[in-house]
Image (cartoon, rainbow, N blue to C red; front, side, top):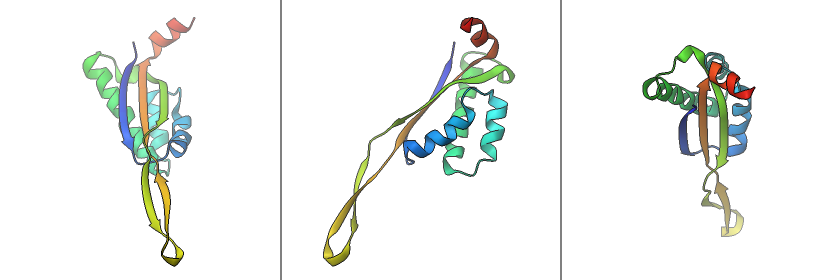
Length: 118
């Protein structure tokens, strides 16, 4: 049974967040955290915090062992866009959108996921 953690309304675009999520998809938790620790991206810290939250949920709520957990699913969805205005030349105003995203991380036991796949 997979345990889930969500982070909503993050101030980073979904496109930038997906690049970091592709690095850790399907890995075990220990190697995913070590990869994210040395990734130079602001979104790497957010992904690492969400993974640690999912691991804490699995340990406390479902009594799973941290050493046997792996990332079974990690998804990034687009959130609402904030419409903003920036001053332009000759007194005009130009609009731009400030994107956000939602991150969902699911961790599962390695033994349980390999038995269910066969």
